[in-house]
Length: 128
Image 1 (tube, rainbow, N blue to C red):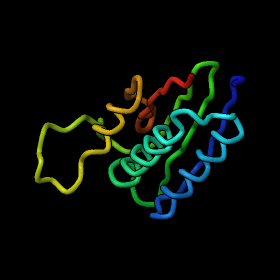
Image 2 (image 1 turned 120 degrees about the vertical axis):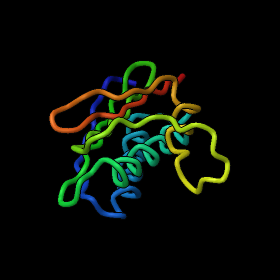
Image 3 (image 1 turned 45 degrees about the vertical axis):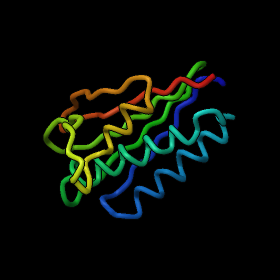
Image 4 (image 1 turned 90 degrees about the vertical axis):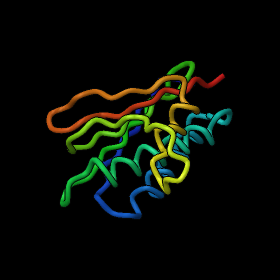
């Protein structure tokens, strides 16, 4: 897999999450990524959903950037909202809040970087 970059902007709309997942699926197909593709797509879903629900103020959007490297894929979601995402503590009765738990379990690493305004939430997944 050669290094490659794909990026797209999405508005604050419900259909942006499935559109971002379709965009990611097409990039993975173009890059020939089959192993761990489902893990990557789930991370894209969770990170874009979190941006939509918690990181994108009304009238704005989020930016999805995916980079393929020789041994993996990096997913970045850029938003303009305040706050820093964190993995929640155990709450078995909560209806939501498990997105970053899934990203933590699936990704080889993840983190948050500042940007002005907002933040970048990213994850990296190694691909054999």
